Image (cartoon, rainbow, N blue to C red; front, side, top):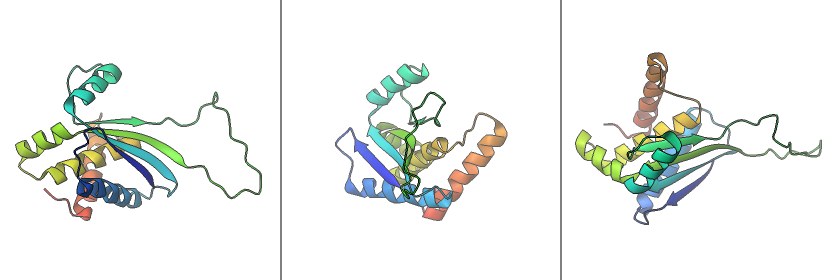
Length: 159
């Protein structure tokens, strides 16, 4: 997986960057994501995620995580022509995850677990959204949250 991590706060430790990287690689392997997948994670504060939440979701408050999935190719997209004998496979960009580090700290304190566990929870939650999982209906929520728990537990980030 090709993963870009952007720290807009300029305060994230190398340990947290490595946690995000390793956890998302683990999650990608867990759900059998193709190796040529691309995505990004942007770490920000409440002020920035509040503005994004308001602009794109119409919700006038900060949130913990937002995922922007990149839609599949449409008929309007210009196809890329490759030679027939080419073995090159274009990477598939699945989208972007944005996490509020202020919310990571607030929610970890409120829930009584580590900030690392909360960060991992939010990153995996966003990752699953990028891969088509949702929790709008009860049965979908059960599937998504069980998978999220499985991934975090298997990785070692238990509550």
